[in-house]
Image (tube, rainbow, N blue to C red; front, side):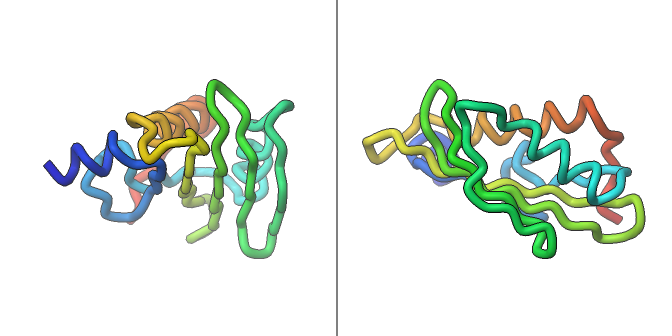
Length: 124
């Protein structure tokens, strides 16, 4: 029941190393940090707006303007040469206390885009 509530009756979703929802587990890619960072930047064309970029910290903050508005934080970290981890945190601006899974589905879409561009690898 708690998983249902956190999935659909919230306005926030984020990924982590050991998430209970397998779709929200951190993804690792066999690619250079700069390549993945650039690809994530390019995932947010106008009307979305990149608010802040910190290459040193591997973070992007974005005001996402799609079907609904959302605030997205993307974290891109090189854990080893040619092994880059990507995490997302999405908070929707739905005007209400729930987004009915929109923030979770947005993360899944972001990962699907990256999966098409890069080879996914195990975290180990």
